[in-house]
Length: 485
Image 1: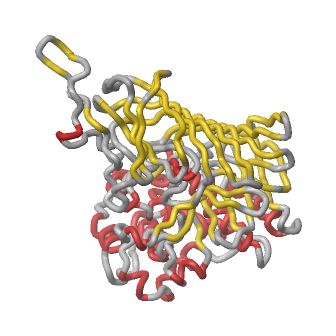
Image 2: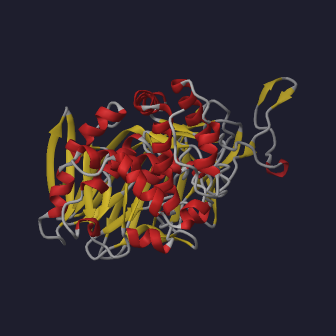
């Protein structure tokens, strides 16, 4: 994600906006009577899956007891009435014996639920949807839950992080945000530790475009409605899913055998925004030379104009940019930031929100590398400017554990990037760039933690780096300038 300077200085985290073990067990009182046995004397105990993934920053985000494999999301949205109707199929595998399990779903009314084709009971408590299948789900077995729902979608309101999720616009809608947003338009295990593949079918009135993630699957029209299809075949964290509905200038193409799909709102005259996202493939090719192969099956970008959204977000394979980033002309810096996230944040995803610096620090450093490649200041000069010019709050907030309210603070971005540069100085360029490519390769399509990143840096460089990372990620004062170890 990229925040505007105004938002960073205001402290608006914004928005909503080793893998965490999904909490698979409920309390003893949640246990259901044995529904099956493993033998004549070993009854199974089926339990309620946990209503959270175990994240210290956001305990209610996500759910436990199962691992989602794939989502099929089919929605119809009528902007004139601000009404959404959908059917989502969640294909998953139980990780413990489940009597019931939870999905995250905000605001919308559930009409029916089936599990493996059989009617299932359901109940709501806030944004938690609890589903009780006709019989228990056995650990290791797959299952498919189909949820039909409808209503007037509403954004999520987080006191610390702001507004995000599904937003009605003058001519359509935007569903976007971090750290949560997906649950405002489909039922989901809404935590990055449970990545899955996605198929989207989005039906809107004729004349409107519905853009989402992944490879475009074409469109079909019937009875005044058009259905747009999209497929993301690489595992994706739920907050990286998006839909943008409205009137757009569409640019299609192909690059290195992958489709390219750009959309710029017609609210903007053709100009800097169009030219900036047209550079997507050039920037991606440069980043590929630094980080290794581009990790997804499509390229693209979407530019929107809505006063409620003043950020850019790295939505998988097709970032979304606020128009304000291009108000002063072309801006490939923000494009480089969001594209760098395709490697770090999207392909390699955090296992817990505390480690957000792994996303934002590496993406901000990629901006510096791109600026140097494009004839601007060197990464070293960018480091020096921030080392000497950053305000005290940057040094008082440790990017390795910023707290939920400062998840998108300037420390996470700028001090996070300075940490990356301090690592580069300490280990030298050869080891540093090997670390970046190895990290992207070994953790591709997976989740990761800071501890794993530190271990990799020490293994590749052959140096002991605990003191460096402790000072730069966890200290509350400005560290000494980095030196070659």
